[in-house]
Image 1: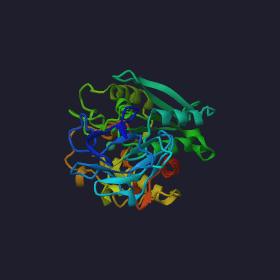
Image 2 (image 1 turned 120 degrees about the vertical axis):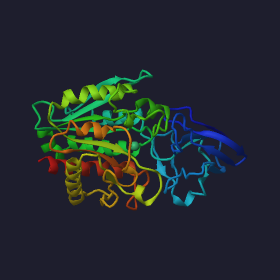
Image 3 (image 1 turned 90 degrees about the vertical axis):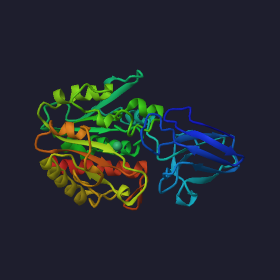
Image 4 (image 1 turned 60 degrees about the vertical axis):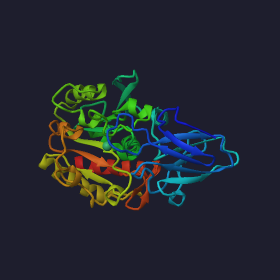
Length: 368
Ligand SMILES: [Zn+2]
C-alpha cells in the first residue's frame, strides 16, 4: 500500500504507519495557523480495510467524512458520517480498486474549470480571457458573461479562491455563471455584465496549498495601500477599476468557512465596514431567502455584521473592503459556503451549483 499527493491539488504528510493504519497530517506549508486541507491517493490496498487518522489537535474531517473517488479524481462522493472514527475515518477498499483518492471536500481544480468551459463552449456570451500569469507561470483566468455586446446597465464582480482550499465556493460560482447563460438569465444578459476571477490563488489551488492564512499574509489580505505580494491581486487591482467604469454595483467574494461547528454549517454573509453596503447586502439577502429554490437553504441566521464575532478587529484590507470603494448603489460582500453541511443538507457539486443559480435569481431581482 502506498500513499502520495503527487498530483494537482494533492496535500498530505505521512506521520507513521502500521499494516492497516496510517497516521497523517495536513501539510500546512506557509499557512501560519492550524488548518484542515488534505487530498491524497492510496494505491495497492485493494480488498483491505484501512484506518486513516490525523494527529492534529483540531478536527480535520468534515461532518460527512471525506470525499472518495474510485476513478482517479473524476467522480467523488461523500463517504458519510458513519465512516468517521475519532479524527479520521475507516475505509474498506473494493477488491478491484487499484487507486482511491480521498479529500477533505470535493476538489475543484484547473481541470474542473476546463470541463466547465468545454460544457459551455458553444455559448457566445461566455468569454475566457487571461487575467495574468502567476509567479509559477500559470495562466490565471477571467471569465466574462452577461451583457457583452452593448453597454450594460450595471456590472457585477465575482471572485473565488482567495483561499486556495475553499473548493465548494467554486461550484457555487459555476452555478451562478451557468444561470447567466441559460434561458432564465435573459434579463441578466440584457442588462448586467459579469466579470469573474475563478482562481485568485491559482498557484495555491493547483499546488494543493491550504492558502488560508499564508504568511506574511494571504491573498484576501493583500489589498493593502502598498504593492500587492501576489500577481493575481495586482492584476485585479489594475483591471477592475477600469472595467467597472462607475457601474460596479455588486461584488460577491465566494469563500468557505471553518470545517466544523454550527456557525460554519450555515451559508452566511460576512459584512464589510461600510454600513450602507451592509444594509444593501441584507436587502439582497432577503431576496435570496424569498426566491431560493435549490436544496441548500440560506436562512441568514449566521450572517456576521462587521464588528461581530470573528469579524471584529479584523486587520488589513480584504477584497471586499477594497471593492466597497468602487461599488455604487450596492454592496461588496463575502459569502461563506459550508464544506459539508448547510443547514443540515449535504453540500455537493450539484447542490452548490443550484445555490449559485439561486444567487443569480436574487441578483436579477436586486439589480432590476
Ligand atoms: Zn476564505
